[in-house]
Structure formats: structure tokens, C-alpha cells
Length: 213
Image (cartoon, rainbow, N blue to C red):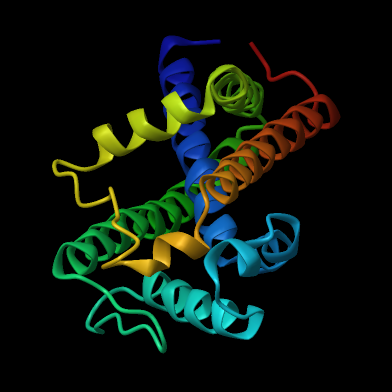
């Protein structure tokens, strides 16, 4: 493969990998059944003191807020919220918005790159994407399996420049309906989605055949 083609395929593989990751994050955020299952599995009503109906109602409001691109103010139907808590959720939405923008921009760039490579009958980018996309779930999966608490805390230290994510149940009772284990399940779902993207790219590469040298 010529140097120019290698650069194109590597760049496309990076874009595809970032797109797969971003789509996986947004999909997991929007996939409410995961939380609904955890309500019973993690005994959230018993642990929080709220009914399942209240828990679902407040969670749905939180997800609707995070799925929006801005302009709205978060107001829980039956949960109090402190000002630091409100600021934290604004920062969380900003992070999710970044992933949404990355997913949309990545999809457009990926489609353009894929069409270009198909016309040239070159598919090396699929192999590279498969490798890159499987490396992330492997590394992060090991970290999560070894020490979830450390991974959870480290992520928050990297993502936020304050300690507003450390909620006091007395002022921000929403934390009582969002146990750490649920976030672990979200992380695992994201990793599974990324791994599936890697597998699909690998299968497509095998089906399309090796690119011309």
C-alpha cells in the first residue's frame, strides 16, 4: 500500500473508532431499559426510600435533560437539588453533547471516507478500525474488572475540575437512585457496543477481502 493510501486508511480508522465510541456512549445514555432493569436488580426502591414510579419519573427527566442540546433547566419532579448539583449536571450534559457532536460529525466523515475507499476497492481501514476498537474495550475492561471504584473515581477526576460530583444525599437525593453499580453496568454496555463495532468491522474486512497493495 502506498504511503498516501496508508495515511488515508489510518485517519479513517481513527475517525471510525471515535465514531463507534461516541455512538456507543450516546446509545447507552438513551437506553433506559438498562436502568429500569437495575431498579429491581439493585433494590433501588429499598435503598433510596422512593417508589419505583418516582424513581422512573425522576430518571426519565434526567435522561431527557442529558439528551437535549441545551436551553432547558433541570428540574426533578420530586427530588431536591443543590446549586453545586445543578452545576454538575450541566457539566455532564456538556460532556454528553460533545459525544453527540462527535457521533454526528464522525458519521458524516466516516461515510465520505468509506465511499471514497469503496470506489478504490480498498478496505484496510476496516482492519485497522477493528484492531483499534477492540483494544479500548480490552484495556478498559481489565481496569474495570480489577478495580471499578478506582476507575470510577479516576474518570471523575479527569472529566471534572471540581468536586461537585461528590453528592450529599441530604441536599442531592438523586444520588440515592443512581448507585455506582449502575454506572458500572453503563460502562460495560459501552464496552460491549464498542467491541461489537470492532467485530462488525473485522467481519466486513474478511468479507470484502484484502485491499490491493
